[in-house]
Length: 294
Image 1 (tube, rainbow, N blue to C red):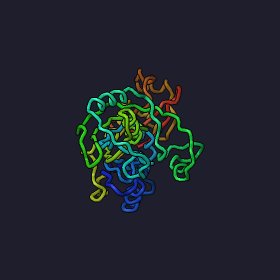
Image 2 (cartoon, rainbow, N blue to C red; image 1 turned 90 degrees about the horizontal axis):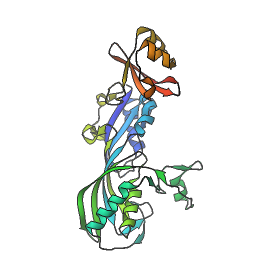
Image 3 (cartoon, rainbow, N blue to C red; image 1 turned 135 degrees about the horizontal axis):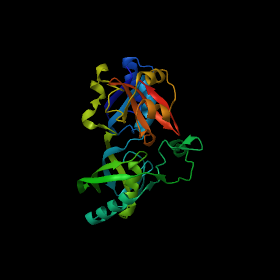
Image 4 (cartoon, one colour; image 1 turned 90 degrees about the vertical axis):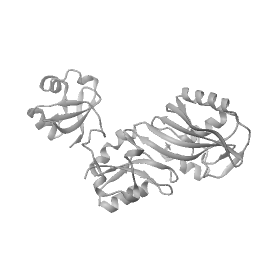
């Protein structure tokens, strides 16, 4: 029972609640997830169980896809539609303004995170500072937007204009901050409304199962290639004995025993014996250390 549940997270609960429910229901020793979603955010959430939690650090680095509604005309303390309204500026936005602003945001490689994020400054999470009204200086963080699709062009909903977008983004990207920046570029305020994660790495919405209907058998074993689709190196019986004991490997082992000439170009790879995945190794300088043994 080392593997992953691909959950379609419902609104109204935290990621920790999802993890606790799965842990309690199926008696796992350890569970973890691939990056926090706000309570009101829905969509793809990867829950790792038992030894699979060791591999979460590699899933967290994966890119993500979000479906979001951006609401123009006001600002909240949380940069989303669920926070306390702190400013309002209703102006009529034109479609060409949106097109130009989105093109500008596509070129940006940095983003200032929201104060309600879990990023740590001096050992404390930003939302702790925000709750205590302590001001801190925020530095831009490297992020990327790979693609933006307009799902529903500018439309009016009550007093405010909205737009529905799909964003393909890198790790560490905050849709809240994107909404704030988009509003600034079109000359007003904006907040994040609805947010749904459509994809996390290789896992898409079609792979996800609603939390209410997940069964123990729905676990995705860590050995499934779609989870970690790293290059494969076939090993002989001599290397197998080393690998099964978690021994560090060197260039000459993989060059001479495995006949793998391009190993120096790989950061991570799967070692295979007689068609069976044995372990995942990672390069650390000139040596290769196991990060997971099946």
